[in-house]
Length: 386
Image (cartoon, rainbow, N blue to C red; front, top):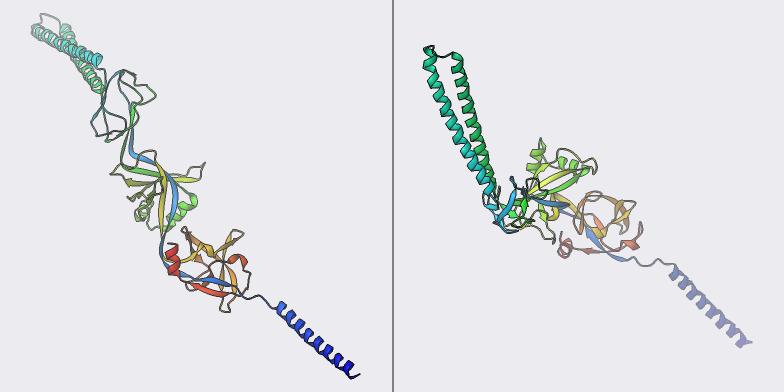
């Protein structure tokens, strides 16, 4: 009987221990998981410059179609395609023999007209004393004077024809109206050239300066007007900083350009207005027909800067997780005034010194507690330049 009682006591004691262990296990399973350790970025502010980019088409300062002003066979070609020529340099020669003969004929007509003037003058001089002596009627003298006036007029007409013939001879040598680069020459020596040909002899491009044309939307144009000081559009353009040109290989053209003109009206079909920037091209690196992108700077004197990784979007609004003093995070919408490749510039919603979660936002919920791991803005900017 004593042995049986001891056994009961042991079984009861083991049951109590087992119950305690189960209770502890249940309590452990009901405990929340530990707060995650996440990097936290302290919002900074500093002067910064961002760029708006617009696709652009480039044109030379002057693009001149070289055409013949006379008809004839192409006798000589003095230049090569792609060569640089200076204003006044001969480019082409049209066969001038027929035009030279026209000059000779016109010159002979001038001499004949001058001889007719002398003949008419002799007749007038002969009749004047006879009319004074009333030997012949005054009508004859008037007729002689009229013939003299007609001879003078005919001589003037002959001189004009001579001048026109000489101009045509001059047109047979086609010279460069401006300095620039020769384009393609579709005609060869011996080709019959006409003033009415649809294709020019060549295209001459003056590229000492390059015009970069691009378009601003109505909203961009309004923002541009509000951004820069000045009573007129011309004054606003003068107060605008220089712009940059990104060429086809994504490198930045070494010379900066200035804004020059704005079109007089918006294009109804596109809702945009054309703008021109002028770039110096002393080395001739840019040509008509090149494409690129205009980089228009926007200056911030004290921009609030956050990494783009620190944001998320819900229904076209941008949010960040802000860390509170209690160690918990809360979502907050922010306004964006500009951006670079890696950063947003904040116009509202955050201030310098606020702490936001840098990465790992996908696992966070409103009010979640975290263990912050501060990251240095200097190290972040070194790894991802502004």
